[in-house]
Image (cartoon, rainbow, N blue to C red):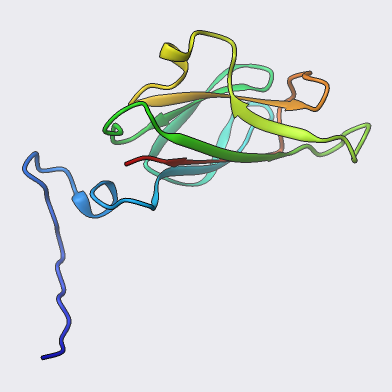
Length: 132
């Protein structure tokens, strides 16, 4: 017997919508933001806000907490007006504070820099979080 099951709302025992957080192998949070000036979110899922901690240093705050802090982060960044448009850029976990405060269930602190390590505000920053 073939058929389709349509459910308008799916909750787990705590009442939290379980369709995204209950599935493995898919992003639990993502954000695309402009890091110049006051950070501005262009698009996101499960991200409530971005905190600007200084040049090239941001905290991505999750709308719904992750089940644990043992998640994987992937990201990319773009700089407009760079004096060296071929310079390698990176976006990664910030080394500004201890790992215990950088990766929590409610947020992750990321740094954006040129290959030489100089922090820089990106015109585009993309962060994706994968968790069990």
